Image (cartoon, rainbow, N blue to C red):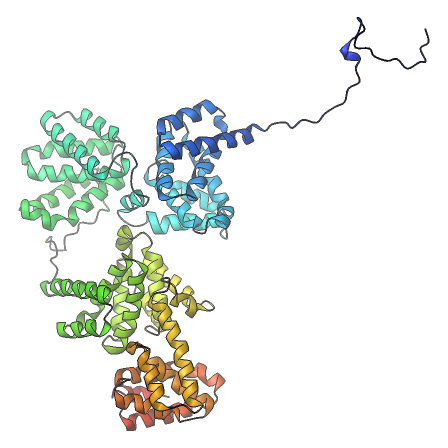
Length: 617
């Protein structure tokens, strides 16, 4: 046998051995269990968003196994919901509550949310309002008792202050968790519970309490409360139990015993207990119409609950120092009612002169700040059109009948109650900051007024934060253009457009135009409350061009009644307020302005109140 010859493998040979075949290593991808898990949960979440079956989703997650990867499931569930509608966001929160403890451990819940906070910067690239949405998910998890409040403090320490995750925690604490009654606000933000309506919950609570009064079985009543599965709504149990105790005096000891035991076993949390008492306190006036002794009974419940340890001692009794509940002054109450009617009419008609006439007819200038508070509060709960109308109206009111002090006092009143406003209007803090900043841009307030407003508020309250936000917004580059459009156009576009038109018509008149034509153009603007801008721009242009011919136009406008004394005074005041800056570009600005003031006073353009301020120039 010749061993030197190349051998050939014959597959037909009876002694053929496949192991002798030449072979080649082929690369193969090793599957990562985590990648497989991530792919599987995407399908699971999509299916859950389609059918809303919590039990099926829980079962499918269990079948996947890999429980060590459950934090990734939480991250994927929330991040997918963030990019969808409110329905899916609500469904995601409901699913997390259902899986808590039974399927996913509390530690895994915390790990999953921390992973979300760490990835907040990436999420913000694709989801513009990622910080706010994630903050709401975080707040919802705290309200649903699947995350302890202490988690926020620990996570904050572990995140860089410059990160979006840090901002998320701040937003969750300040915008959603710091105000009283925040649980209801957070719970209803995405449309409420997907499985049971608020009305159904209230009915079930009322039924179980009445059944308890009949049976006296505390353990059974606690079991029924627990089975409702609405920990965030236990304040309603507290409120209804207290009302029932007032209605049925013989049942009072039994109902108070139920609340005490529910608190001691942790069924009703301290915050929910306080909320229940607070809710009842807020409605005592109405309740007293049906139960005359309601106030006295409530005042007896509070110290008893505090002394027995089931109501936090920090609960603030809404009664006055003399023990009597405060009754709002009838005159103020009547004014508020009239003011609301006037504001509603304005939102329908957009008629500023008519509103001003109505306010003057009321004859209560001492309540101007109350009107401002009511105007902005009503606008906050409406669309951008009404918010824009409110900002434009503030400019007109400041020119015609409101003093700067009225405006400042009104905003202070608003910001003092910012936390209560946030209960009904989720984004109230940001919206109020826009109103403040817009007032600065519209020259309704001076930047120094923001400092004054801030100094009258507690340093760490949400109102102070709003003032700081407004200061930042109004001092940013191009703030004017952005804030004039902050409500999405509406009359804001008209204001900006009016400024451009005023500049053009003044330039055309200065270069040889006709007075009557310029007056016609001013009238065509249709914004009489904004004519102070004509005065301001005309005076600045006269200084820049060294052409006092523009004073002739102002005289014609004043003679025709096109520009009122109030608006003339406002225009001169605006020039005076910015005279130092103006002098940087126009060296003789102060001298020219002094001449214009003297001319205006001789022609009767200005209010007498301008005299003292003019001499300071």
